Amino acid sequence: MSDTTSAILMTSLKQFSVDEHRGAPLRQMFAVRYTQRLATWVKIHAMTHNVSDSSVLRHALEQYAVANGYDAHH
Image (cartoon, rainbow, N blue to C red; front, side, top):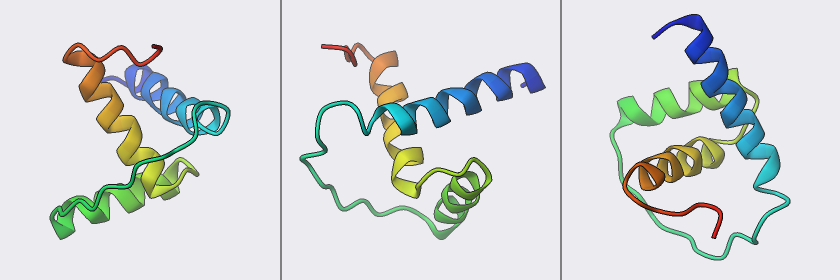
């Protein structure tokens, strides 16, 4: 992955974090179990980009869902 692609993804994550506060209210909460290694990566990624752990996870989940047919803007 090039630095340009990385910068675009990071801008996208930060913008996602800002925009989600203006969008629909967060109504659902899921308990998710994942490895300590992934938890560490999520925390470091969130701190590096000045967003919450939850924003990183929601962004990743939404990107996966969109890639599989979910309409994020409906």
